[in-house]
Image (cartoon, rainbow, N blue to C red; front, side, top):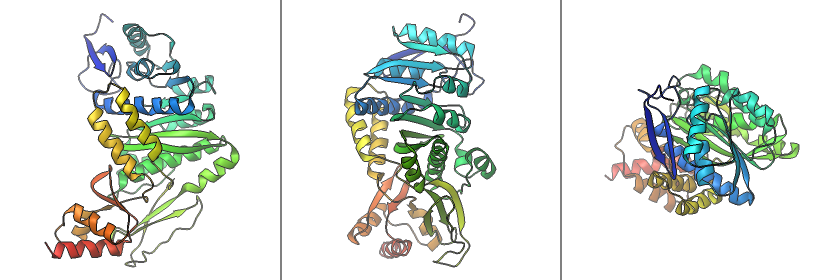
Length: 388
């Protein structure tokens, strides 16, 4: 450790040290990303909420340990944690992980140096929580996670390859997630749903099903918190949530069709143009209001540096729960109609007056999640715009 300049940071109740580096990359001597503190703060709340739900001590796997910040915080800041297993293929990372465990006077944390997938398969059924937070795609590790995850466990997955999941680069998404993306105004939600669908299809091989407790797309990454259930019947039922989104880029019409091998429409029923397909992807819920509400309550018991941002995001995700898949971007509709944009709040008010659901979404500040048909949304926006 003497060969590096050492940097010290504090997150929550935890202090860690690691070598200073010029820029965040996989080439850093030991990986630490300060921009992921919000991610880690949310994880503290999610894992504590899950621990209380299960009402037992939990064992946690931090699959890509890096500096050890995530695994060390889990042991130091979550009540009811038995053992934490921190793995990293880097010997230097292991050295700093051990140092940071000692720095925080912690016990019952074990450090390992293995290939991530091999490590999971060597410890089948030992973890209540598996946290997969790699540099890049989680895709190669999800099969091993599906193999070794136990009944009623929590699987936490981060993906930073958002350009693939959002459709900027179509081929990598097809290659890594076996799904075709589409770069629409709601592409970040589509990306979350492609990732969730890939997890569901991967775990189904092992007769396991998923229930998404929380998902969010923030800055450069997407994050899922998934409760894993076991049983072939549950798995078969779960896969009924796999399907496709058909989108018209000319009039912004879209529809969902569930079923892995279902037929999808070719022609837009609104304007007669060709529809673009995205999927297979997850068309089930991507937020659980009850779980998120308990996370919000749990924030009162934790020291979080990013608490204000955490609560803002969680409240937005809670409000989105049970809303229809996809959303409408008001400015995108106005550009299509060649009219000026009305105030967003007025659009919400008028949709609700007409008896429709209408809520905001964390995916886009101009987005509206609603069960209103596209024709009605356009009609309301036109009326409001003309009265400006």
